[in-house]
Image (tube, rainbow, N blue to C red; front, side, top):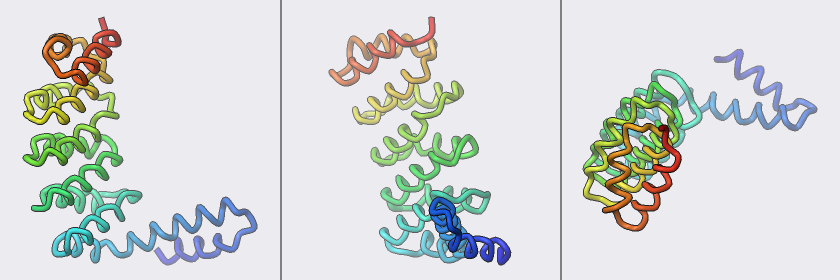
Length: 186
């Protein structure tokens, strides 16, 4: 870690502005990584805003310890902290998907909506089943987001659900379902 820090500090004095900016960003990440124990403590015992700041501090970092801290935050008693953790996990790639799928069942609709959003950018057809289950949610906003995510998958197995919502859904649901019906696989 000291060698990395030394190289980054030297790069801060580079003649190229782009190199200096990258070095500054990298140094900041290195500093945050050095404070993972403190971040873990904030997530465990901090007040809501401290917890949320700690979660977002992990957004640009990689590694199993980072994922571990975020997964722990997904079970926090405070819905805002859980939502922040799910949002950050959404940028962590395929390894985070199972944790986000669990968040689809969160009793707080904000957390469920964030989970659907986090999954909505994936093209992994294995997500179709969990997203289809979300269509049973009582919150129309959660259902609308799930319809949109399912529509982007373009999987014909969702045709029956899209037909249902194209006819029986609210205006937003109908428009999403109708669009999806036109774009889905044959």
